[in-house]
Amino acid sequence: MKTDVCDLNIEGMDVSESTDEDMTGSTTSDNCHDIPTILYACNVHESVYTSENQRRAFEDLFCGIGPAQFIYLPSFRRVRINYETAQQATEARISLDQICFCGQSIGLYFGQLASSDNTSTSLVPPVNEKTFLISPPASPPVGWQSKEESEPVFNFDLISALVELTPGESHELHRATSSTPSVVVHICEDHTDAQGNKIAQNKIQQTRRPGA
Image (cartoon, rainbow, N blue to C red):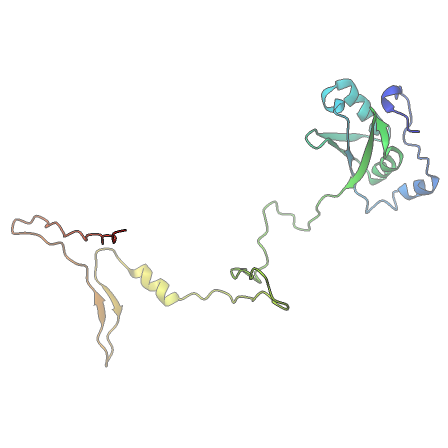
């Protein structure tokens, strides 16, 4: 039968002693280098988030093993516990897992932080192997593989021609050769009358829709 922690005076109680002697030996610092220092307590009673006394009693359970920081997640009824060493987190996991607190059994699970060799705080762009511009079919056939797209090709002649364009001036699209003439685009002049006033251009009428 499990004992409810809310009915006990936990002051002075040593909760770091594990009842499983075989697992205690694995909490040494030599064997904990791959174990996270973060624990997640699940199914935490609602009073821990609302009552200061219940919160203090909850924290005393884990602080009896070692210094810890607590992050409360009331929406998920979870609490994140950060220990200084992996050995402390392992001892807490062994001794406090499934402990009954305020009538509810608390589950403890290790939390793993995402490790990265990149020290930059900025997002790293993906490897430039595939751009995935070609979407796969809705029902890919057997053996279908995504096509690797080639790198984009830059037409530097076109780019340089666009840079040379000047609004309001004539543009030579094709230079003359010994056998072909040049192609030049001229800007249309505004139609004016004898007094120099601009003549309104005829507006293109929209095609009428056929009758229903």
